[in-house]
Image (tube, rainbow, N blue to C red):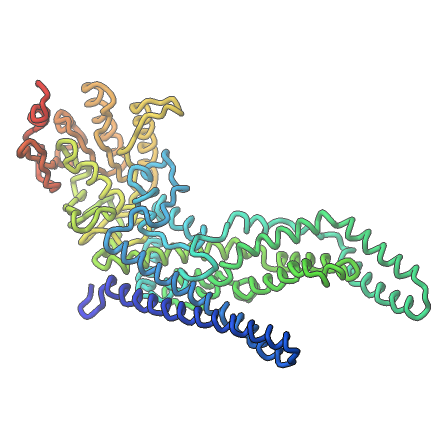
Length: 590
């Protein structure tokens, strides 16, 4: 954090205090307004009972008070939501956020090459820490960025936009308080399906008939009034009834689907309008904001026009409009207006949703960057695959307990073989390297003092279990994953493989030969990686060259019958084992 800048926790606390004070003030105003409403209602009833015409004055004032009270309640809800936004931010900064955000469990895929291994989704996992998205598009975009590495040009563009948005606290607050609820809104799949579905009222005669018949009905009504001849009026009304009956299925589809679509678009309209007002200097942000338009009309304005159409549709439930629905062919005109909007702007909805999703993903990562000012952007370089981290830590571990290490896979070194006992930190190190690489390739800051790497595709074999449902053993599941990693190693970008206790589901000889063959094959395809083991025999495997493999280890000490770990990487192969001593310390006769 730069000298003179306010710490994120202090700024959040200041803003939280202001929003809580605003909430308390609005509570007081709301109570007083409610009392005024009651007094005005009593005064109006008393005036009516006394037969005094002055009852109109308190009645009018009561109506004004109702409108004002509604406005105060909306302001109160927004202030409460803003306060909740800053409380959540403070909780994240203080590492108390687990289980209090959106876990993104719908994105979890046990067959993905690293999602489950690196704890991307689920309570207490990475997505919950990162996401402040208000729409499913934002969630989808953020999840997709975490699930696949972006090209280096895209990563650099995202870094620039995240840096630009990092200090935009007002923008993040404004987005957090939009809408009628604090939850995630907008169902993009339904919206795109509606926007891109073909028009239902495609027959050419509908428009002229919808214009001519109401005019004819008015003319025949005048004729009936002047001559007493009712049959022309009845005939035109019968024609209108026939038209409505003929189009009833199409009308029900258009009107119903448009109302349902606009329920999704309400939050989108407010969100889009707010994003359109935000200045942008970086190329990626500018490009995304430019996409929020259709035929030169801003997306928020186009959505507002659809809102007007929906108001016409909803007004059919009004008693007066319901009476005039058939004579004026009101439903037909409302449906045609909805179809015109879809014909003009429906093709742009998918682009809007994609742009909003990407912007929300950027905003989520900019919030994470602001709340973790010590986390830098990684340096991405071209060339032979490398990963060089100084003081790298796991972003899901509390800062107070996170032990950091230097990890370098560069130059002649292509694989780190890490030995040590169970619980010594081997798996955590793999996850630390993997999750920071995922963040780096998504364009986000990383939990390290410094990280320099080439574009990498992470592939992990850490949390592999048997599956009763799928009828596979752990060993079969593991070798299936290894085959997948071998296939990934032949693609671009190079693979960063993370193998935890590789092939432990088979006998020691097969394990040694198999592990040696797997690592050789991965290295031959340009991959780099880390392999952990507590089986010291694997430290003797022969890969491409002696310089290619670098042995490191975690140490442990048995003190007073308990294992003690420092979780720090040390050079070479682990030199001692405390397994037997630990078993004896708990009473096992070994």
